[in-house]
Length: 64
Image 1 (tube, rainbow, N blue to C red):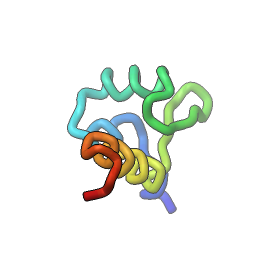
Image 2: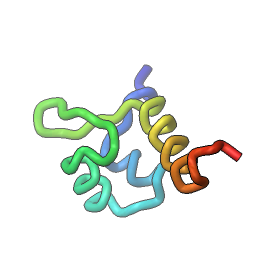
Image 3: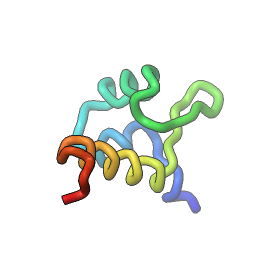
Image 4: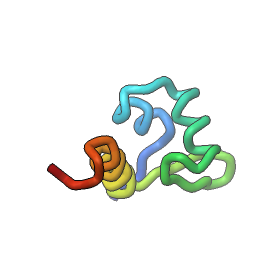
């Protein structure tokens, strides 16, 4: 299960963005995550769903 939960650094690497950008997106509620203590954590499956949703939105939402 250790690889099911991602850190801000891992999410940034996955999305190919800067860690600071990932932090801003998480703080603004634009990517699904939660805080443990003062640190952001992300479920790999939720990030995958979020990516799929964004791709579908950009393709007009018809999935084609």
